[in-house]
Length: 478
Image (cartoon, rainbow, N blue to C red; front, side):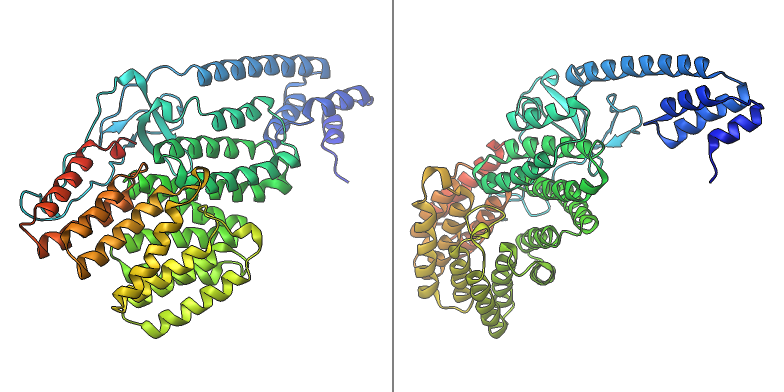
């Protein structure tokens, strides 16, 4: 068998190389192939003795340790960076290898056309709070290379991010139990996603994602696939948070990255979840054909015992009904009910990664509404509102409750009058967790009400409240 150490001995013409061989083996242990090759070349080409090579390696180790200490100091105490300007080049001093990038501007919030309202081609001016530049810092979303300017409190001081970041200070392979706990953290983040403000969830998920990606460099190869899966789930949640914060372009980019994570990790459940969330964004944008394709891909790729499959089947029924395919909608609803009955207990719940029986009932009310059966839809939808309104404080879902109120407002606008419809909409706009889907649904409702009752004072008040909310909200600041 070829031994490079024997080759070194032959080229140097030495007869007794036992001490050199022993020292060289210790020197190159744990080194990368490139570093080991360089050290071997020093022995051959320069005639360096084993003792001299050991001194060179020791000096290199001391220099490397100093560099690590300096890097940690710079990481824990970053210098204040000036606030970048939208659509202007942004230099990132923390990473010299990165080239100049361009900041992606968040998508504008559009309000409906009507008296005193801008058209769909004219966005309302974005609200920018007065924040000192020293209180903000540039953040690189390392998974997809987007630079964003966000308040420093969104990425620093979060207890979850800090706790996981401490693992990196050990500079060692994580224990298998730690990797199991990371899976549990993903499940908990999904459980509390719709209860946590979108800006807080954004900073928490992004910081955790960066730590998980760094941990992969220390872990054993047999755990790389699991860590890829964890990173993929975090990236998918990051896409949701970016969408809630109105940055649609960044959200789509993150979703694309999450899909690649799922393919490399061979995580069918993650792939199905990304399809499901992509379908939701397409449906909100009115691209129903694309939404149907994503929902069908989600239900076909998901494991049979996964909650995301039930959600995708129920949503497929809703899209079929919207497109006028009521027979297909009924088949999808039946499949969703049967799939829900077969779910294990771990997949049942009100979180973002689980599903409850109310989700199937909500799909039934949507299908009834689209078939024109308003009374049946109102009765089923009222059950949904009562369910979310009566949840304990620790399990409340303010976004889902607000969206249910807006759907009820649409039904009341068709069957009753503007006063009842605007009252339901006002309850939705009073939510404690304002996100982009709520604003989009409220926009559609105001358009319908304004066309039907253009001079009604209740409609005008609701329209003015929506405009004020868009101006006052801090959604576009992330």
